[in-house]
Image (cartoon, rainbow, N blue to C red; front, side, top):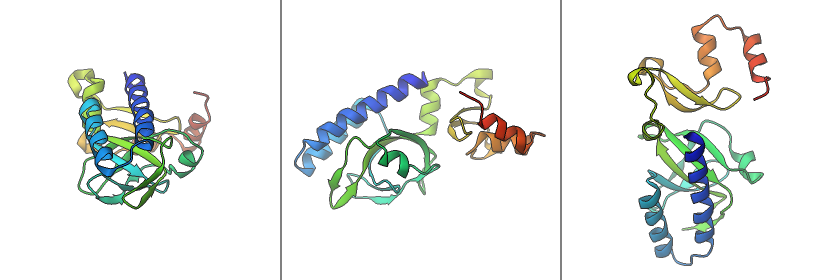
Length: 183
């Protein structure tokens, strides 16, 4: 289910990126993004610089607190999926593609991105093991958490291996070996 969600959102981003490159006016850009939001149901759309700064069609600017450094991935032309924290908002799952770049309202962007609230992703994935009381995570191979469905007592979990080390007798050496295992 996650693979379908990922493929769908990255495909949408690639298509929208092409449309944005061929759209002349800000009004057309806003209309295009609003239509895309209706179709896909994402929470926010960002024009994103490689260093994590963003601009929205509302003119709002800020820093998208991604839990990983995306600059190198964007510069290499790779799509990115990462958690983000924006002040005053719940944890977000961000899909970004550097396939579109340009200038919007004077803001030079290297990628476009959409974001969903983490809770919406959990609902879509229907994480309901043990009547929804299980703690479950979707992680990158290095332990960075992409989707967090854990109890509030755990707080925000950023690295699954770190949680294992804190809550078990898992050694640092074992953690390093797990990171080096082929996926």
